[in-house]
Length: 245
Image (cartoon, rainbow, N blue to C red; front, side, top):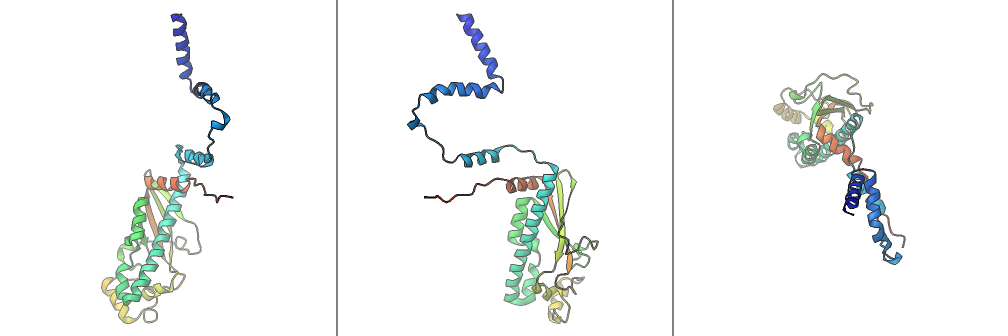
């Protein structure tokens, strides 16, 4: 009898070690418990779709290189658009409060609160580059193709294992910007331009027209931030349905 029990236990242990047998054995063990319940005692789950979506979200997924490049574009678009929106809002307020003198210190979108906060979440660094910059540290050599405002493509690359880059044209899209970047004597009063030259003696960023490219946005991102952004963008979210009754 003891020998038979040992053989049975050895066989059961072997079956449990097989991945395909584990679900079947678990079901076999639960079957007596399930059969003991009457139909009116069985509680059916009403949120099975939500549970399935949540389970899928927790599933470990492999992120391919092409997915990371796609996420780099998403992240770059999100950060640069946030910067443009926040810059317009802040400059409009400051120009109304105190003209160019009040607005000039705030024409640095990468330092504005919402933009800076998003950059930290994305583990990204935002910058601008131009062939005719106001700040000499933004000086760069750019091709006409890189600054083409009609080109909606984004230049994304992976120069290193842990580094991704993004670039798109920076276009003068708001008439308000002409007050500091338009034609001196026409869009920019002499007194205002004197303030600009006092802060930026090597200024080249004037003479622009509406719709003209002023340079490019550049974003460098860490791989961890790109991967996290891809995960959040592809995460499934169940829409709440309005009850029929």
